[in-house]
Image 1: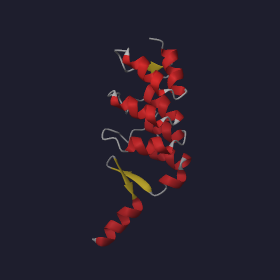
Image 2: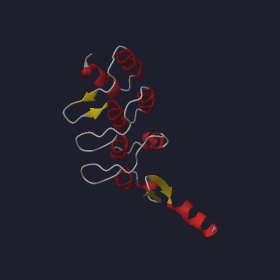
Image 3: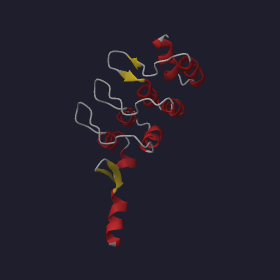
Image 4: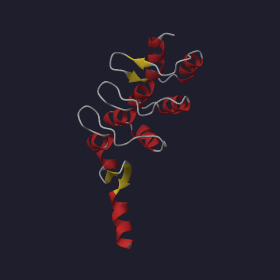
Length: 141
């Protein structure tokens, strides 16, 4: 299999070619370049939500960290890919408190890059919490 062909298929949002290539590939945990960038990370960076969804059907590691310690969720946050971020956050096995080599988790990156959406959120015990909702819930107690 030619990793370069798969890389460009993902990069160019060519879902049918991605499927065609991966149907013939036995090892689905393909990493690109020396940084150990995964297919899910590349699709997340580019905001190619349909490819991200397809890749997750292949039971790939959604929390894979490249050499910089970045996960697909952190990368989507760096590149302001809100649709991908919201989709990844709905995945049962997503780890939102993972930190990259700079000591940043997805929420810290998202606050900087997608600030309007994530300013009222915090992470508590590995869970994403809306601080406004939490305060309303506490008022009910």
